[in-house]
Every structure is written in structure tokens, then in C-alpha cells.
Amino acid sequence: MKDLDAIDLKILKVLQEDARVPLVQLAERVSLSPTPCGRRLNRLEKEGYIDRYVALLNGAALGIAMSVFVFVRLKSQTTAAVQTFERAIKLIPEIMACYLVTGDHDYVLHVRLGDVRDFKDFVRDRLIGIDSIQSTESSVVLEEVKSTTALPLGI
Image (cartoon, rainbow, N blue to C red; front, side, top):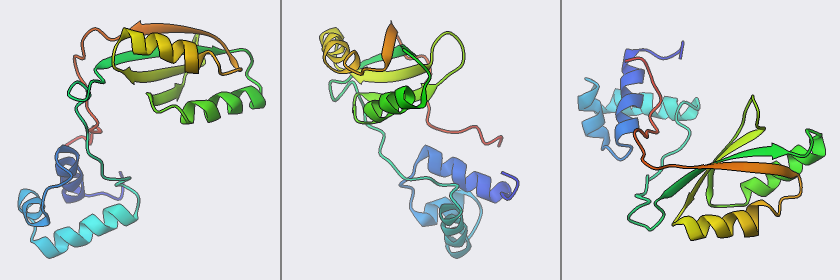
């Protein structure tokens, strides 16, 4: 963030709240005129500070209300086992995120599904079929207390 000034950070903050904000409104919110604001926005995109623009969907409205964290241990930490696991995980759309972690487990998966039956089918038909997995443990989310996609920009 060393190359970003306060206005750049404000632009990023506003976009994290509403990526569809019109340029004129964005400029007003960061106290710039539209042309310099547009130039800054283009630079932020070009320099990779803005990765992509997305729509955040309402999982409950779509019948995908259940969140589960699955803790995975691999049979071994060989390059082949890790690559097999990571390739397989990337192909499963119910897995929202996969993190390589320290501690008792090798990976943590964030899985979104409709209900417990969907989760049972997911584990039985998709997850345990990945050859490099030794074991899994799961924690079902009972209530989402906080969820954000906004990074802490310090402003």
C-alpha cells in the first residue's frame, strides 16, 4: 500500500462497498472531479490493486444457506499428493475457499450447500473420493456473525 495515497484508499473503500457506483458518484465521494478519478481508477486496475469486480449473491435466497468448514489431513505431504488434492479441489464448485494451514490439519475448506443431505452427498460422493485425503473433520456454521469481503485498508 506504500504507493497508494489517501484518495486511492478512499476509492478502494468505496468500491468494496459498491463496485457498481457510477464514476460521477465515486468522484464525489472521494472529493475529485470525474476525469482524475477515472484516471486513478484505471491505474488501480492496471497496477493490480483491483483484482476483479463481482456480484455477491444471497446464498439463502438461492437455497444454498449451509456453510461448513472441513478440515483435511492428507495421507502425505509429497508434491504428488498435494497436487492431486489441489487439482481436485479446484474442480468442485461447492468449495468456496481452500486454505493451506498450519497446525493439526493440512487444509481448511469453506463449503456452501443447501442442507445436511447435500453435505452428506458432498462428502460421500465428492470429497472422500480424492485419493490423497487421509481424514476430514467438519464444523457446521450455526450462525454467521460477521462476513465481509472488504479488506481492512486502515482508513
